[in-house]
Image 1 (cartoon, one colour):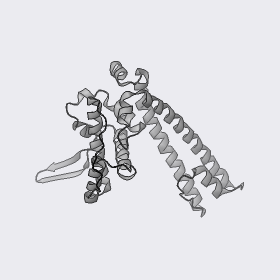
Image 2: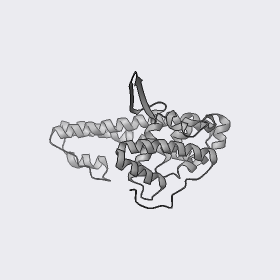
Image 3: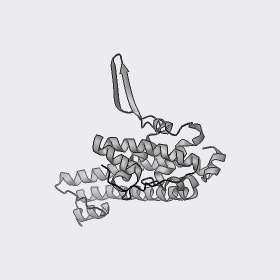
Image 4: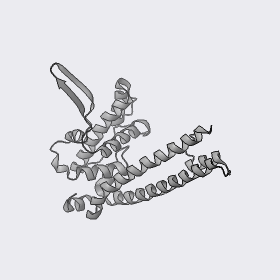
Length: 241
């Protein structure tokens, strides 16, 4: 990100260079944590121990409860993996604190985070990937920039749409997709965007609706960035029919 752009957006110039690397490193650590979690569950399941998936229960507590205080090789193996899991979890938490601090210092990120479903990671990843919003003449081009538009295959008389193009930054695309899912399934307050997405979900399925909402989120975020506008909640709270 250019130094004058970074200053105007409220992101310190030094941080603007490291944020994309930090986001990428965090994503890798999250993937490693998931892998270790699955490995622990798989080892225990081999011995007939199935960990419950109680909401809000710390994973370490579930493992300790299942293993007990034994001194078997199984316990030593699982606790070694659990130690790795704890280290990954702590490093992810440390990165989250740093990223939240960067988001608090960014005027643009604070503005984009007023959109329902958009959090720290989505806002930071979007801002650092776009760099300069002026390079897009039209906001609707941002969806294609992140690979959220249909991919076409044409050959002779064949003309097919095969999913989305998946061009551009895959991490930003993932965060936008997750933000869309949060908006559709977890945000309780109604908005025109949520109502539109749920109508689409009823017609074409939730996955396609998330992709469409993710694309629209990218367009809205760019437009808000350019205009300095705030997110407009719809006064229409009618059910999505």
